Length: 185
Image 1: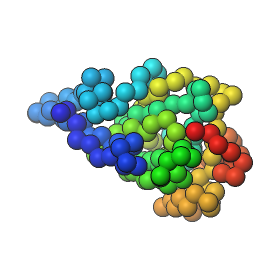
Image 2: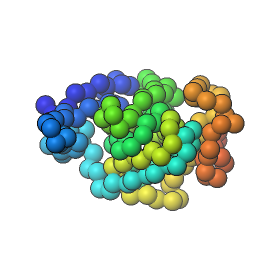
Image 3: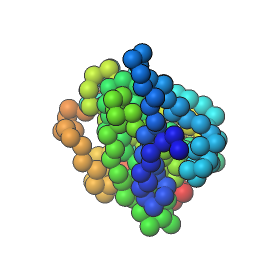
Image 4: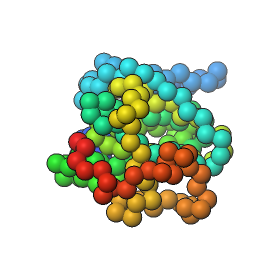
């Protein structure tokens, strides 16, 4: 296997560390290979890859998800810098409904995170000038796009800085509270 893996939320969210082949020139790594991911049980068809740049430390992007039929699975990795990545289970029938897990992803630790359909996703930059690459299984669809507030007390998410220190987009600043969502997944 070209990866080491750790599974969370049963066998739904996966932290994946690709194997690096290193020598005096640097390294080479296959970070995604559809056949290998299929053997892991990750069957999503990733159809788009996005690249995100965030200028400032303590910028939060999320918690985002898309409603059916445009829901997205994601495969997230950090190209530069470090982030605190959050996966939140929104599947009402799940034993882990409304539970979340935080992951530290950095360019140095080389970990990537697979987040399946039914989860909200967001991240906090832990340093300036972070770049993130993520694959998605459905294209962006504005009418189905939802931002859920990371500050909703019902979610119990704690961050390593104060709310006042966090930069948010208008969309994330105006994010919905959990009680206004209803059943999504």
